[in-house]
Image (cartoon, rainbow, N blue to C red; front, side, top):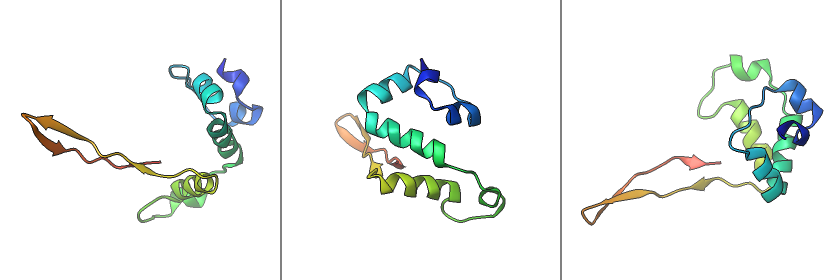
Length: 98
């Protein structure tokens, strides 16, 4: 059950929805990553200035999350995708995945 896997702080401060047993899969198959996500959600504090000040490329919320996870060894990945039509490959570029 999802609620049993989440610390009290997260259950109290976030609205959480389960989708296709994601928490069971993450906690059992990827316990280190699951721990990182729980730590991030527990330590994160949304600052008013982060959402009221204009920005440029990336929001301060994204910067916080990225730096938190990068410090724990997470890396961005880029998927190269494409389709083949009548034997000719057409690239279908995507964005980077955190």
